[in-house]
Image (cartoon, rainbow, N blue to C red; front, side):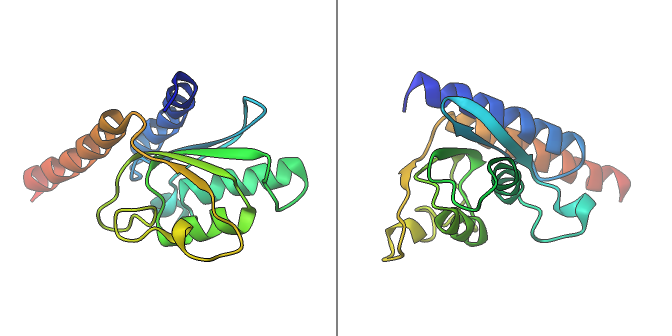
Length: 156
């Protein structure tokens, strides 16, 4: 973990906070090329009514559109929560060489918590760095779900 990794994770956290403000599970992602953020995403499943609207997929889609191709071999992905199997698959398919995540996901994490899809013999195996700003990334999730529970208790 480097100061650079922390700086880009702080940028991803901004998108997680924006997702929380919209009532979405607070996950944010940024894609970096040549030390510049070229694309970002946040969870939009609830508002988009679409299971595919994960932060990583939104960021990957935007990066592919910007760069004009599906191979993101010159990019890195920073995401506040360990990717799920769908997002890990997209990362492998996009050929992203390095993935940095914040909080572990004990329910769907596919980069070490449940399984590590990056260790399987696929044609591409990204470098993985976990636990960057882990406490801050986990806290935004805890705060979000506590607020939801509190809202349910008062309304019902």
